[in-house]
Length: 370
Ligand code: NAD
Image (cartoon, rainbow, N blue to C red; front, side):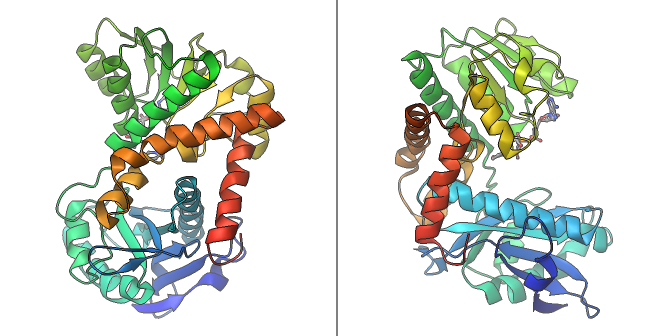
């Protein structure tokens, strides 16, 4: 496998936005693993002495095509830049995708991973030299520990699981409180009702935090009946299981999307009764226009990449000693409040306010054009 820059190979893809795309390719040019780096920030010097200018997870998937893999890397690294910019960090977004559809048994056999991880660390991460990675879909602490032998200083979460879900859930609770405060004038959870769509790693964490904060009524929806039952066994008096197809339309104070993207769309938005939408799912708006629709429908929307940035904050605080996480997580609430206030003052959708805030930060603080 050889190192190659494959920016040109990506320029026709709709998600391409000036990214640098580094790859390991087979002799015929077919990529096996690719790292999309969206921007370069000024960077933060890590305690290990490496200058980190971009950050993002390493995921492995059976993609249906190479283009699908590259689009995933481009889209997710851009989203990471937005999350980082939301915190006014000097680090941009990156993302690694392993083309598991090209590597026999990659998802099921450790032996299949070993040569890929060795080349990834030795050649790719070392060549980029400023990109910090961590676990993501289908990778874990064992993978990270192995990769970092070949690229010390550029891998997070080696000795223990770097599962970002608990801190993401905490950030969502902070965001929900900011939205309640803005809309009702107080952030009390106990007098409010919630509908949580998706009770996976983050959603279940949000439910537990809401229960601990005194929520009296929480509706939960998921296709995984085991996950629903386990949660309801824990809190039989508080949780009621509801229809995944109708959960967004329940008459509650807060709709909390914690499943997949695209839930806020032309069909679903008119059915939303909750005055607040605040949850962790990535890419909740099916299109940019749906941000306008949600605003005119009268919903206070907490932009996803701001409210769900607790996990990235944890990595940056823990691995790079950036700041104290206890100081950084509340910034999610501060930033959302600022967004809601500007949205009210100028009657602009919160999604657009957030987009222009991060675009300004990106223009001013990151290299390569937006
Ligand atoms: P997960 O896979 O653990 O949980 C998602 C849950 O949603 C699953 O239980 C799934 O069955 C359920 N689900 C899927 N479609 C559904 C639907 N239509 N209706 C109801 N339930 C449905 O994922 P997660 O890590 O909890 O992440 C949830 C969302 O938050 C994703 O969009 C993810 O990209 C985003 N996110 C996660 C993190 C993190 O720290 N894990 C950070 C930022 C953003």
